Image (cartoon, rainbow, N blue to C red; front, top):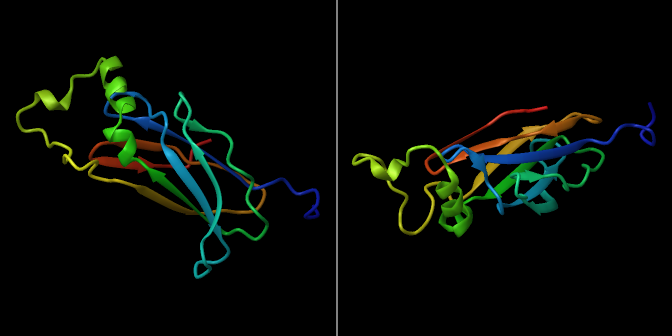
Length: 143
């Protein structure tokens, strides 16, 4: 298959706030790319999660990209009214009600940002969900 007809390499993501069992709306993120593990990072796109916690509008990756980094600005989400509203709609018991539960610092989230770096192959799609809570996160390659 020639490079003119090769399928694009693409990335999508979504965020689920596992502390409340709801999508994390309004989280800003940036997409950066590089070629090789010692290459310089180049900003390539930016987006904000929608009401379903998804970013569907990230640009296809440029030819030669071997690694991608997604930088999620999660602190603003956790100190915002969006997280508070999600907690109000949750049916899960709140950690704040527990005497020994850790508390987020007054200055913001425990993890103010999350950076995920992963390798890519030409012509594939990479869906990388972020499962987020105030004191931890996990990621995986989705479908």
